[in-house]
Image 1 (cartoon, rainbow, N blue to C red):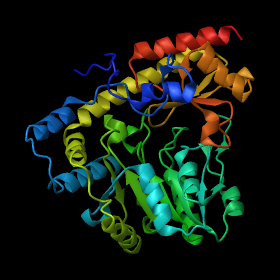
Image 2: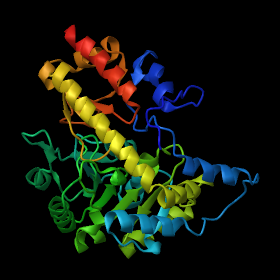
Image 3: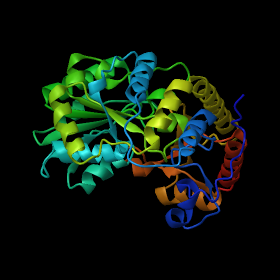
Length: 390
C-alpha cells in the first residue's frame, strides 16, 4: 500500500540533505545519508490536510484548531500510556530552539548544563552558544556495544553550579530506549541535586524490534516534578520542515515560569500548518507508521547482514529506536582524518562522523537508513569498495 522503495528526486526543494553537501564536505557528488530526515514521501494524509487548508486562500492570523491538543493527548496516552493534561502542553518552535529557551529561562550565565555524550551535538552547541558551560557525563559502552549511564561519574561531575541535565530519550546516536529503572535512578539523582531535566523525546514514536519508549516524566513522582519533555511528530512522519514540536510540563511552578515567558514572547503560537500536520499525523498515521517502521527494520537487517558478509571491519549497532544506525568502525584502525577520507573521498558518502557527538564517538559514523533499500545497497557497495582498497 505504501511505496517506500520509490526514489524521490529532491532537487529543487532546497532540502538540507543535498544542499549542504558542497559547503560542508567540499563536494556535491556524495550520497547523503546524514541529516535525520527520511527519503520517503511525507504520507498523503498529511499532504491532503495541508492542501485542504491551502484551498482556503487566506493565510491570516489563526487560532489553534480545536483538535490540536486532544490529538496529542490521545496519541501519547495510546502509545506511551502516559496521561497528559491539556494545560501541560504548549507548542514550541522546535526542540533545539526549546533547549535554548529553557537554558535562558532557567539558568544564569555562570551556571552549567550536563549532557551525556556521545549525544546529539546541539545538546552541547546550544548551551555553549548561549554562554553556558557544558559538563560531560559520558555514557559507558558495554561489551555488547550498547551504552549505559555512568551514575558514579555523574556524582563526581555534578556541582552546585549544575542546573540542567539534557536527556536524549530515545538516545541519538546510540538508538537506546532507556529502561524504566535507569530513568528512575536518573530522576532520583536529579531530584536530590536540584537539576531540571530536559527530556528530548523526538524519536519516541520510532521504537523498533519490540522495544518500547518510556517517557521520562512518567516513571516516578520525582521525574514528573523536575522535567520538561519535548516531543514532535516530525521525525516519525517526515515533516521536520513543518515545525511541529511541543513541550509537556506536569510541574505547575516550572510550567508557569516557562510558559509565561513563551507567551510573553509569542513563542508558543504555532505557524499555520503545524497543528494541521500534527492532527493529521496523530489521527490518521498509525497504519503508515507501522509500515514505515517495518521497512526501517528490514533496512537495518540488510545493513547488518551486508557488513557481516562484506565489510566485517564495520560493526553496526542495532538501534532500539529511530532510523539512525551507529556504525562502529574502530576495527579499521583509522585515525579520525583517515576515517573521514575513507567515507567522503573514497566511498563518496556523507554521514555524520562520530566525533561530532562528543567523547566516546571516536571511530564511529552515524548512518541514516530511512531511504529506499536500493539507496542503502548502493551506499554499502560504495563503502565495501573503499574499504577493500585500504
